[in-house]
Amino acid sequence: MKKNDITRINKIKNLILSSDSVLVVGHKDMDTDCFGSAMGINTICNYLKKECKIQIESVNESLVPIYNRFKALNEYENVFIDNNTAKKYINKNTLIIIVDVHAKSYVENIDLIERHSNKIILDHHIENKYNKIDDVVFEIILDYYSSASEFIGEIMKNLLIDFPISKMVAEVLIAGIALDTKGFWYRTDSYTFSILSYLTSFGVDMLKIKSMFSEDFDEYNLKTGIISKAYIQDNIALVLLPNSVKDKLMLSLVVDDLLNINGINVSFGLMKLGDDVFISARSLYDFNVQYIMESLGGGGHYQMAAARLENIELIDAQIILEKKIIEYIGGQKK
Ligand SMILES: [Mn+2]
Image 1 (tube, protein in one colour):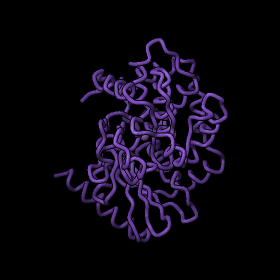
Image 2 (cartoon, rainbow, N blue to C red; image 1 turned 30 degrees about the vertical axis):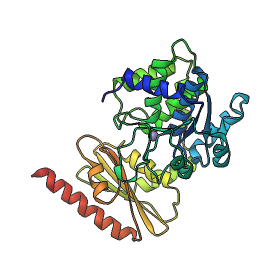
Image 3 (cartoon, protein in one colour; image 1 turned 120 degrees about the vertical axis):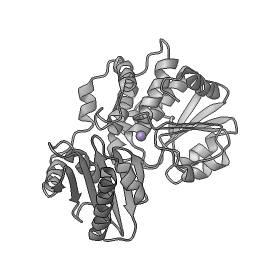
Image 4 (tube, rainbow, N blue to C red; image 1 turned 90 degrees about the horizontal axis):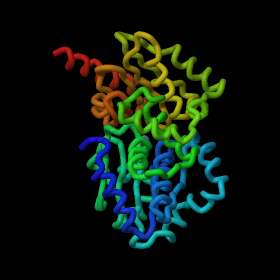
């Protein structure tokens, strides 16, 4: 399967057209990519004149300001609904569109989804067959899309002929792509930029999107303090977050930023939360962090992956991780 497949796009269009209404469901702790793609589906439904609602229960802290801006607008007044309202909203001819997730354990409102048969999945994560929502009428789980927003943006670009999309919707889709590609660097190709070209054509100011990712002074200081204590060996950096940090976002900020430093091509960060240790990993070039995270029970992509080790101390997790890294490097040299 490749990008920009018109047959696939038409299939999705026809599934929407043959349904009474649409309910979009994303993942728990909804992020900007998930929200952007949901807003994209909502726009597609407007174009196809189908009623569409987006079920939102829990949103990530970083999405709150964007979400509030949409909620304040009259035209979206009844678009966002909670789990209970979603139950009352759907009938058997409603199409549930699951975006940016396909894992049973990570999707919002799994009870409702399992009881409903007319549902499809549109996701960009690496397929996990063991924890997948089943019995769907159609699914596209393609990890070569950088983001769900790129994927839905592609459908919009092909379907919405002469149909202007709102600047705010275009912005949130671009922000979704920016989030999952770490500022358009990771997993982007010429198709990604053609979608960005389409989306920016609706009067988008890219600096406004950049400002959505601004950090505050305290966060910046905390991050650079953690980074300054990283161990670095053979282009690989490893950093332990202090116990005082309770926000997992800091873990990904740290591993992302380590790769901005000359001479660091791979970064690992570890943090203890409750009884467990969370590990986040990034790489540039030819180093498969997904392989290492998978060997620890986690997953992700070649250059961006994560794992969770249960009931363990930080130091023990570090020892296990270092052993895996050494094994991986040893295997590569053979
Ligand atoms: Mn995503």
